[in-house]
Structures are given as C-alpha cells and as structure tokens.
Length: 434
Ligand SMILES: *Cc1c(COP(=O)(O)O)cnc(C)c1O
Image 1: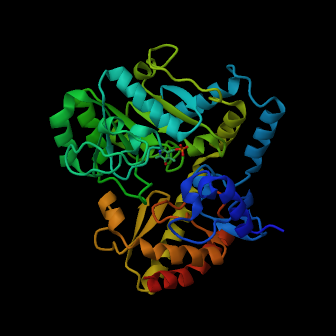
Image 2: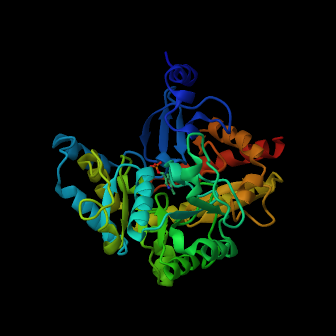
Image 3: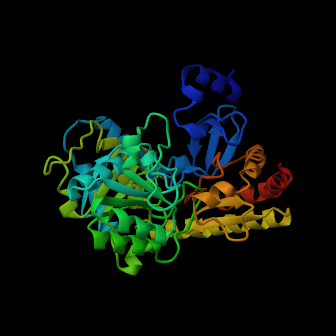
C-alpha cells in the first residue's frame, strides 16, 4: 500500500527535498506533499484515490483542463509516428504559424524546451544583437532559473543586483540591474545612469510570480518607450500569460490595444499544452541573430520535439474565444466568492487579479500589492492554514501565497461549487492563523 506520506518519504531519500521543483515540497505551507497520479478535466486524483478540484493546472499549461480528449488524441498520433527525429518536421512550423497568427509581433520563432531556456536565450540574443551588456529586471519578476536572472534582491535606483541564489557569481549578477516593479522613476534613473550599456529590459507581461501584480496603467508602454529611445530591447516574458490571459496573451490586452509591440516575447506553459515546449519569438531582424543565421548560439536536442509540438498545436487550435470567455467568467466567480468568504471571516486581504489570473494577499486591503516589497510584507502566515483547509475539502491550490490560481475551460459548475463550498472554513482558518 502506498500513501502520500510513504511516497514522499521515498522521494526524499532520492531527490533533494523529495521534489524536482522546489515549490512542490510544500515548504511554505507545511505538511506532506500530495502525490498525484491522474488528471481529468478540472480534477486531479492522488495516490490514495482522493479527488481534488485543481487550481494549479500544471502551473499553467492545462488551459483546456487535464487530459483534453483532442489533445490526448493528437499526442497519441504523434507518438505512434515516432518520439523524435532530431530533424525538421512539419508540426514545428504549424505551431509557429499558430503563434504568429495570434501574436503578429512574433515574426520569427525559435522553439526551446522550457521557459527558463526561452528567457535565457532571449537575454543572450538581446546582448548579441545590441552589443551591450546590462539587463534590467524587476524585483519579484520570475524569469526562470538562469544565473543572471536570479538576481532579485537589491532595491533602489541602479543598485547592482545581488545574487539571488548560491552558485551565482557576483560577476553574473552584476550585469543585471534590479529595480522595483511599477517604479517609473527608478527605470528612468537606470537609463539615465547606464543607458548606453543596457541591452534589454525584461519584464513579466503582468507579474504573477510574486502573487499577481497588475502593471500600473501605461507601465508596459513606458518600458517600450524608454527602451526604444535608448536602443535597448524590450523582452516581454509571457511564459505564464501567453495564450492564457487572451488568445494573444497579455499583449492582446495591452500592446495590441495601445499600439506597441515588444522586440522579443517568451512563451512557455500553455504553448506546450502540458509537454515541455517553450519559445522565444520576435522581430525578424533581431531573431536573425540566432544561429544558424547569426552569431548568437542556441541549440537543443529536443527543441521542437514532435510530440510536444502536437500537444501545443492541439491546445492552441482548441483555445477558442469561448474558452477564454469561460475562464474569465469562472475566475471572476471564484474570486468574488473568495473575497466574500474572507470578508465574512474578518480577514484583511486584497484579491490581486489581472484577467483570469488572480491570487490573494493578506493584510493588504489598504493599497493592494504593487511591487515585491509589498508582496513580501503581507501576512503570508495566513496562507498555510487556508491552503490546508481547502486541501482537506478536496481543492488543490498552489502551495504558496506567491503563486497565481489557474482556472481552465473544464472548470464547470460542479467544480466551482466545490471550491465555493470549501471557502468559508478555509477563511476561518486564515482568520485564526498566527
Ligand atoms: C514559469 C515561468 C518561467 C520559467 O519557465 P520554466 O518552464 O519553469 O523554466 C519564466 N517566466 C515566467 C513568467 C514564468 O511564469
């Protein structure tokens, strides 16, 4: 017999922390991680046979719900044709076309295997294309775990980044300047001081890895304007938001309406439909610097893997306007119920929401959360008891207050009712937390 505790004990003997990605270890909420063995629609089932309504969605890819029949069928067909050839094949062009139809600024595309690889490649490409070294990022924005992009500490104007991880050298971190999100004055000051050496500003399209933090109106357009003026590139990291917030990602709700386009986009999560695919894309003139047409090296044994391409193609083909409308509406219903339950229990909070992506922050009702300092200052101790009350009631939330909640096209009335029914007891647990 296996239960979650036994499985985790075995895992811990073989893998650091018992996991292959740290947040899965339940470090910030405590308790034993749940081992999932299957997923269907809005549900996951664990090794003990308990079913949960899933609000993690594999951290984003499951836009259509788990095991969507059309996606599974497309993957089966691809598998039957062979797992990979290490050559060109038709479905990589098909996926690239689907991306460009939705996001015309993605003039050329390079498929890679993870979001980390996409942003790492985008940064190298920006440096190679501009001949400049410094990359500006915002505190609390997560762009994967490549060395230079782990610099997250450091605040104030033009503070040279401190390594955000052991094993990242000062030299690597020192070429990343970290400033607070939504801080126009700091961004202006960085350009005033380092303008001639800045290769790129990289930003999450809308931050969702410090909890969801909406950009102030015009903030992304301001980044676009400053980078353009100084000959730096704008890297719009849509690994989480791409093909999720709208059919054209967060760009579809911002740049498309406001009339601007970043130089480079990075995509991940939804684009692979649950299999390991991501992409860097953008202006043809910049993308042409990538090998083999240009001098900026990038390669990948599994890049454009046909099974992953099949999952991505099937997912995007099925991500219709109805899918986005359903997810938007459902997210609003759940967010409304969440805030009502917390308010009834007397828990001070803010719902952090951009389109269908949202998270909760505690003790932040006065101003909400606009940057990383405010995200870190919240009463995060309230989340663990809240999370475990939901888990007990069969609702699987992200095991960290700093992660967004993901809905899918498969979250129907029954799933939503189960979430709503679980909220009052969880809100009470949050109220009693200390
Ligand atoms: C998840 C994420 C990444 C990293 O993607 P991986 O596939 O986990 O390497 C990068 N940027 C953003 C905005 C993300 O949400």
